[in-house]
Amino acid sequence: MKFLSPAISRLARLRYWKIQQWSEQPRLAQREVLQDLVTQAQYTEIGRQYGLSQLFNVKEFKQRIPIHEYEDLKPYIERMMQGEENILWNTPIHWFAKSSGTTSDKSKFIPVSEESLKDGHYQAARDVLTMYYANFPESDLLTGKGLVVGGSHTINKVNEDIHYGDLSAVLLQNAPFYGQWVRTPELAIALLDEWETKLEMLALNTIKENVTSLSGVPTWTLLLLKRILDITGKNHISDVWPNLELYIHGGVSFTPYREQFTKVLGKDISYLEIYNASEGFFAAQDQPHSEGMLLFLAHGIFYEFMPISEYGSAHPLTIGLKDVQMGKQYAMVISTNGGLWRYLLGDTIEFTSLSPFKVKVSGRIKHFINAFGEEVIIDNTDKAIALASKKMDAVVNDYTAAPVYFSDKGNGAHEWVIEFEKEPADMDAFTRELDAALQSINSDYEAKRHKDIALGLPIIHSVPKGLFNAWLKGKGKLGGQHKVPRLSNDRKHMDEILALINRPGGPDGPSY
Image (cartoon, rainbow, N blue to C red; front, side):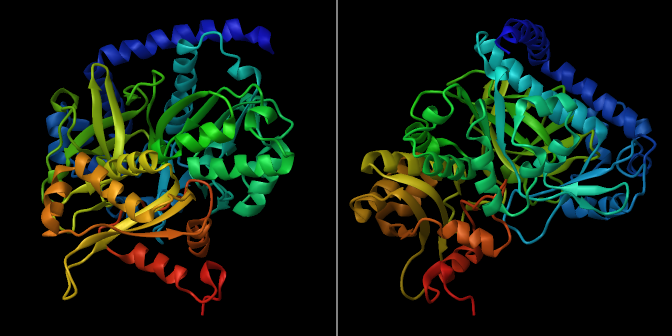
């Protein structure tokens, strides 16, 4: 299929010109998106409720429609799942993406319209490839197959017309027929529900394929790659898939995983970060080795940005692209062609460029530690882990952290559970390096650590490999897009994990 490469490159150049157009006129692109959304939904139930047919500018849009969290839209969504139409969007909704971004016991069901699939998820995915080919015009990426390490939820039927599953299952089920030609494994394996069986099947059924790209959450992708090396007896993945050239990742910071991927792959490949979720496909890295992802402004999503300080206020302020600043933390508020209106996404982002607009994901609104005014976010701890690991020649698989509150026994602290791939020779020294790195990154944390007045030295537990997987499995959250919460401002997750460590027989012991 190598003869296709020149034609693919020409098509990519044409589409790349279009991407550059809306990047150069971002506010025009966003005005057109909002106008289309309002026009489409003006006669829906929510459109009549907020008078969308009478809206003429962004200011009125923001005045009329309050910011919604999932619980605010849940009553509408439940009716849509029973088959009611013209509620949040004007075309029938047959699919719902079951949100799997956290380990919460509560599930969210995000409506997925035909428009959000075609103009959002699928078009954005094509644009990711467009930008890749713009950078690597001689690429043979599409002459082989892409291995997607997706979710582990099967398709569930609500009734004859309504179905739900995790996002990857919904996307695979609705993908254009030609998508089957460039994807592996077969759909039956890709949609397997039981993660451990699926991992084995993925490995066995893709070893002999010409895999040119990988995509998935780093944790689960690494598990798959290591299993493939076990089965084949090879030293590196490049010995199994010599034409592998790209890994597409997202969902968590890649920083703690880069060294492990380099070691497992055995050769240099390209890494490309994307930012997508059940609610939409928001951004992707357009330049290799550059920080930040290009914000997709013409894919059926209208953006607002809430300064973090506004979260929790009665009437939170949001700003548009013309007022955002680099280095500030914002929560994303989106209105989409899937029927989400001024929806608080829950992610925190930071702009890395204002021309064009590029962002990086810095954490989650509810995933932080601020028990003592230290305002530690995931971006801080990911960088600190990377710095300490490099200094101490350690490799971290995953981690979580939570506060230790003031008590009669002493001041507060941060308690960490870390699963190492390669444990440091001196854990006390690693603790000091992690603490120093975090102080160098976050001045609020540094102030609270001054002379141990508010915060003491971190408490670190090194746990056996597989501990986090055992915890996720116990919650029915193993595999796919599920992730360990890096930071919590309470001790719920931490106490559950510590209880698992201390169970008789360890994580595999009885659960009585």
